[in-house]
Length: 339
Image (tube, rainbow, N blue to C red; front, side, top):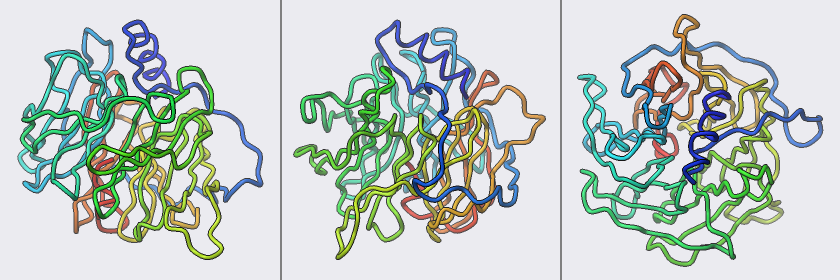
């Protein structure tokens, strides 16, 4: 989704709203973490439905944050939706129907996830550096967190929750300047006590706990790198390390989901596909949109049905914003449902 991201910068920078945008894919040298070992098998994703078309006001559409609610409907956000257009949607994947859950005149919402603590829907507002929460039906908007963290306002992208409902946020600080100032920020579930757990990251984007909640998988968009950050310290445990080098070519690493077997589903910008790795960095599969599906340039994220293997991938480009579906390698859990 390189062209789409470049258009997002040109369009939204003028408005003072920096929607996630890639700054190019760097070449890497071996020796820092595990390299991807091969392409694995190909999994073909199939079109379920189109949710959006390109917005005249913003010149694009960009779907993100798929997450299943307790009612079985899939919540999806459109990062670039203008004021008055649906920014949060609810999809009945069986009936293939969609309805508006929430819109406003200011936010650029880049992810969605339900808290295990209070059941509210949490959204990252990348434009204003805020975490916003809604009732499951889209009512009762509240600002959970706003302001600076260690002297700098966040550019929050994705969220991971621990078992107690505390938030771990990927902060893409420095993205617009091309500087590696990104962070991982922990925020108490009540919105207080924000703490920087890691910094010096290059346009940090995806974030997800492993299956045991012992550490976080983190993707860096402009380094095409997945890192692992232990959060439960054990004897001999090291700090953050590079876990996977993603051979993406012109594509770049976006959001991450983790299934019940601990496999990583890495979304790609610049290519409507996802790369799937095991926890040791072996490339297991590539989820591909059929070549005949023109006008699609990114596959940002995926939700796997809790307790099942049916997966729903958000795919966007000049042709619009779509849901594609495929069979995941293992069952869905909280870590593969939102972010």
